[in-house]
Length: 105
Image (cartoon, rainbow, N blue to C red):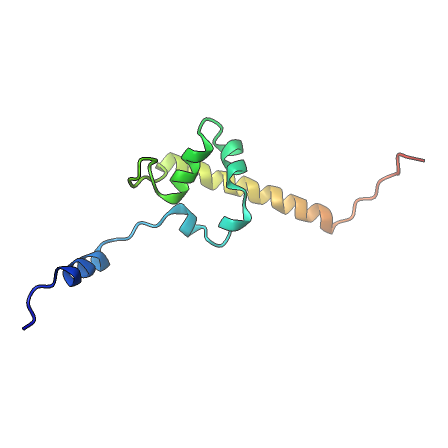
């Protein structure tokens, strides 16, 4: 008859639990287009690049679960806003030609 099936019960419980997603997953649209080590060095200068990658991946460096603190999440958000503004400025500068005088005449 039906009986208890540990595998089925475990899968049912896992489906009901809230699922944490890594920062990489949340930013999958841009994750491969950004050099994250440069972001880490510029905006998190007091942390190592490996620390930053671990946080993005949702691990604590010891194989356990670890995520950004609220303050770090805000810092990353601000970093991405700053980076996006720098990209926007670069795009604008190539869209609008700038006239300059040749210095080598």
